[in-house]
Length: 197
Image (cartoon, helix red, strand yellow):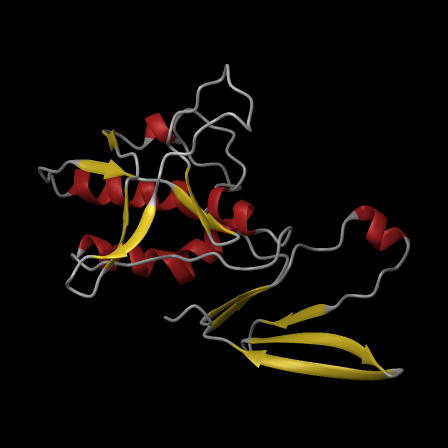
């Protein structure tokens, strides 16, 4: 699936927007796999329709998105393939919520609001433990924002102000085999899904 293969509608209108009757700019047709962008150009309604591999509207549940779009990718990872789930979009459109979700831990159980990352971690551990596999796992956690890579696991010195903190150098490079790697990321060993959910 390419990065254009998944259409996620923006967050639903909030209470204030609904109260003042703000018109919707985006609508989804999940069965037709279409996202429509509604615009007024020179007092004329112009609709642009985009077709995707899958479309999830604002009422889509985290589990449904994960089961349909992400679980097959995690299975490919467990089969030995390198895979990426890439959240792309404008600020405030729900990328962080889709990836992380609402994480009120319920004694090791995933809440309904759990996003892609905790669900993927759970699926990986459940599969490996179900196979009685001998494994070790290390994770990295990084963000690309405004063309700048931030290592989200790197420790910061709390005594320094944000201007004084030195960012650990992280670079995006090719490894000589045509693969892109991010060098200089902190890695953390992970031994169970519960510890990190």
